[in-house]
Image (cartoon, rainbow, N blue to C red; front, side):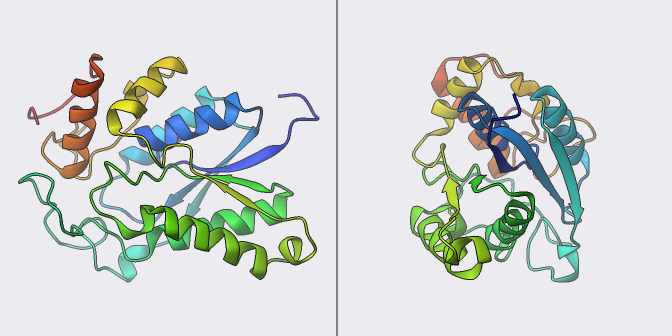
Amino acid sequence: MNDASPSAVVLLSGGLDSMVTAGIAREQGFGLVALTIDYNQRHRVELKAAAAIAEALGAERHLVLPLDLSRFGGSALTADIDVPKDGVGSDIPVTYVPARNTIFLSLCLGLAEASGARDIFIGVNALDYSGYPDCRPEFIESFEQMANLATKAGVEGDGFRIHTPLLSMTKADIAREAERLGLDAGMSWSCYDPAGDLHCGLCDSCRLRSKGYAEAGLPDPTRYAARP
């Protein structure tokens, strides 16, 4: 990026969706300020994936912010609750982390205002999303309105934009987009309950990822302990 390129804060979890989102932000001409939240999730491998992705995409800055949401609990990702392995259902699953995207976007907003960025990218998806309420367009629209009411930049007319390039994509669309962007999707990590350095293959996230690659007609670069 040249010095005239605007920067955008990108929420980078290390997953496929966040990787593709960051790739799209870069393609649109933004310099990447990547923010990864270490919320004491049940595994560390996605943090390593986020670091590798930030480096591969040439991020201007990559912050890993510790925030111990295990102190709150209430989710299979932050408490001693089994991760479901019996298929994707229609109810909000126990892997939902209470208010996670609200918390994470608030941190992105603070970083954006402090660093002079006015664009925030998040890889939420309203189609293949396991039923999470904080991945819906209504939530994103409401958060953007709040961001411009709650910040000095917003009330002074230098407002923020929340970009959700994957919002209406299926997982197959996202897999194809990774391919189009020339991203090494094998660097990303989606699994909720890894088996060592392998994706478990049976949690909701693994099933959605595998299904997406199958529907896209692309080879799945993911290494699974069990086939979804």
